[in-house]
Image (cartoon, rainbow, N blue to C red; front, side, top):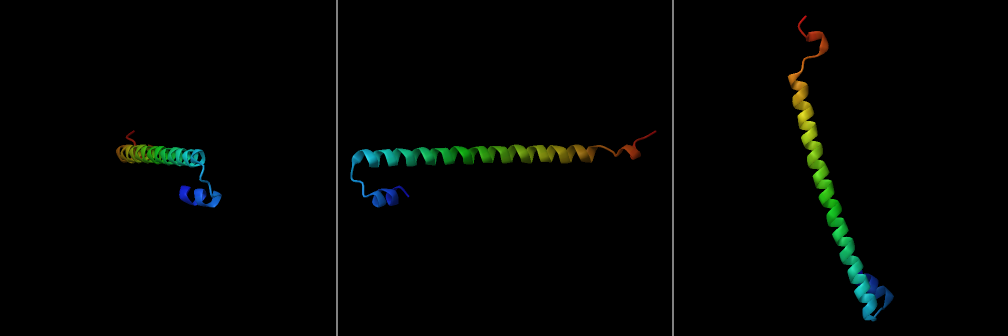
Length: 67
């Protein structure tokens, strides 16, 4: 995409190319950070769901409790 922007702007100014390259790098890093957060949250969610399922299997409904 950065190449397309540079071609569209027809910029041969090295400052523009440098700025676009650094912005592209920053955006790629941000996307990678967000992907890591999503993976971490999915793992936490899976762990919580598994724990909830395990707790539900170990408890009896109120009407089935001994008197």
